[in-house]
Image 1 (cartoon, rainbow, N blue to C red):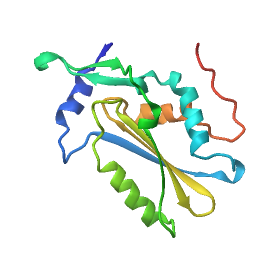
Image 2 (image 1 turned 45 degrees about the vertical axis):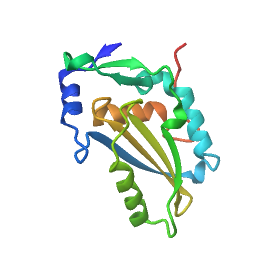
Image 3 (image 1 turned 30 degrees about the horizontal axis):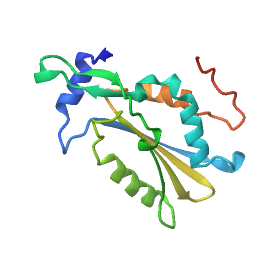
Image 4 (image 1 turned 180 degrees about the horizontal axis):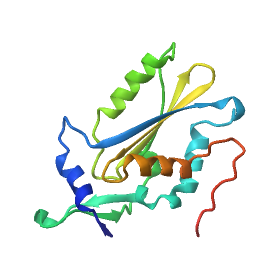
Length: 167
């Protein structure tokens, strides 16, 4: 159990149905050096490396009557498949189609009943490329922390040594 900081609580309090407080990052990957990289491989990698990011298994718990800032608690019913999505953009699979999908994904609020993040595996891009769209609430991570977390969860090269996972 960990109480949210005042700043992180502010991100929650400022959120409105038409003013979201999540952050998103889109990475386009070239699979030519890793043809076996697909949705199931990404799921396997993220599942294995989730211990490097325990925040990704936490959910919010509001304090009764709003008398204090919310706290993070372990999600006893955590299911990674609730957070991973596999989609394909329609042909011709260009930047316009990718932008439309990204806009749709980022236009929806995250569900506060579950850990506040999503990852979208996007197929249909030309030249055997795929997109990874990572979306997480700003109270969970800021942009800089999200970038460093992405580097821990994913590899920059197909033959990279995996990070050491703590027991």
